[in-house]
Length: 183
Image (cartoon, rainbow, N blue to C red; front, side):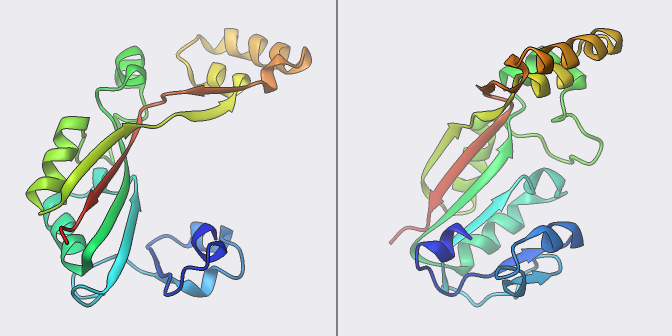
């Protein structure tokens, strides 16, 4: 929606799951291909931007995917991805209770390892930045490793007095990564 709103053309999405497609705005749905992204889906040197959010963690071999993305980008094109950060403060605090440590995650990345991955695939000027997630205070209390009984009392109380809806930005364990195909 944002890209279309800024006048971008040729916007295409690839999504293997039905739920996000159905949740997308009606003007975006026809632009989404319902399948897995695979080599050969896009011609070499044709795209200006490829984005991918929290997907690489689910790949057994992330380097071939990264190389395919590099291949389909035009010279000067960019890859923008969001990855979980296994070195994040939240992962350290929550330990194995962190959502980063998920049975479906085949890979766990750090800022250093994700930068290495992109550079190995041929990207240049790779930058990694910590993302802040903003959620209401009651949500953070709900996901923190407090005893269930404490949450059952604290969450409704925080909502009742109003501060439970206060938006709190925290580095919840994600990082943004951008890399460019050398022009």
